[in-house]
Amino acid sequence: MSDIKITIIDREGEAHLVDAPTDMNMNLMEVVRSYELAPEGTIGICGGMAMCASCQCYILNLEHMLPEQSIEEEDMLDQAFFVESNSRLSCQIPITEELDGLEVKLAPESN
Image (cartoon, rainbow, N blue to C red; front, side, top):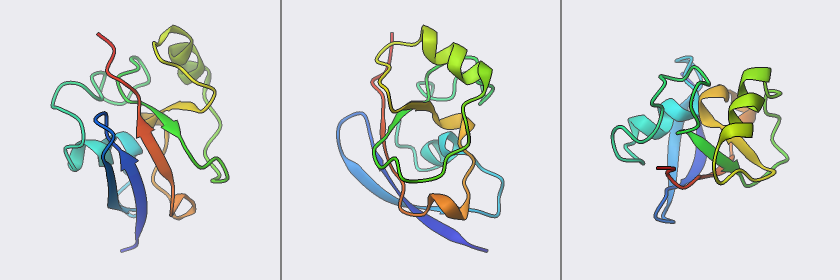
């Protein structure tokens, strides 16, 4: 079992240093949900299928090797609110050892 450390800044601006397991096939959105860093029903509404942007986050330290955006993720971000150049859908970022030290900020909730 191998855990990595990820800093997640919630929608209120509070930073949380969390342990994320690399051996459970989780994605970043699932880590956020497991630590309850966003109110229930406000993140991962589509279940991690890149069909909503409720799990949008901003990657704060871009030196980490993230998977390339899929066409579905790009399309969803094209329709989302509060998109920045460092926006990603957290459901599309699998937890791997390469992400140790990653820092992300949750995007504001879009109504």
